[in-house]
Image (cartoon, rainbow, N blue to C red; front, side):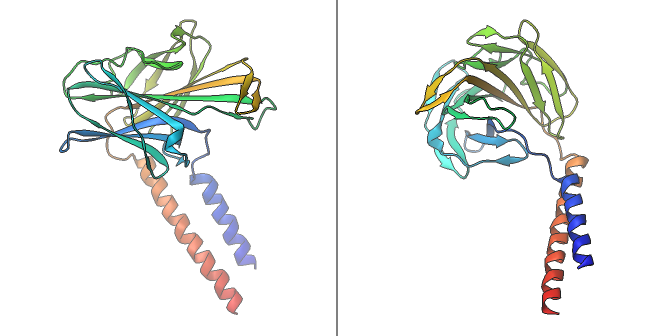
Length: 273
């Protein structure tokens, strides 16, 4: 029995040290290019990048694209595991700007008794070839993060952007950046809605802005007292080989898995005895 208690304690300790913490759900977009097919695969995901994805119906999302020539189109989505997916042909070089919205719903945060209307939005700019960049031009999102640098060539350094609500700059907005090495950077936008992050690692950075307004109403028979607008922008800053931190995390998870297996075998053996 003493051996079993020590084993469980050791497992819990490893779990707390190496398993990433749980974050709030966010909507984000991820794109993969298939150059041989001249096609982009676009996934709309509900969860938290690098930590978990939650299952949701593809019917709960809307996804649109602005092509390099300026033409816009709402894309047809299909179910793809826990995410929603669309395919876009590569017709020209330049920026393909994607933006998505999730069906609004009500929820009550764990640390509050106030019911909120959750309005989730996401955007991503994917650059192909040597065409013009248009990521600094806004799209049709209520809450939007607009980069103020050329993100097609951005790797590390000073990342500048602006948060707008209904097309107007919104100040005192919490902006959070989740980095590829599990960095969490946070800022509050200035009176012009602008923010700056010092990005020091390459990979996928998820930038998130959140604005809570005292807007009440009802949806699907549910009353709410506030409206929470959340918007994300995913940046891929020339991802390199996995970092040593991520490698150690994988090793730790493997050790934990082996330890769980050994603990189960020990319990089975004790029962037989």
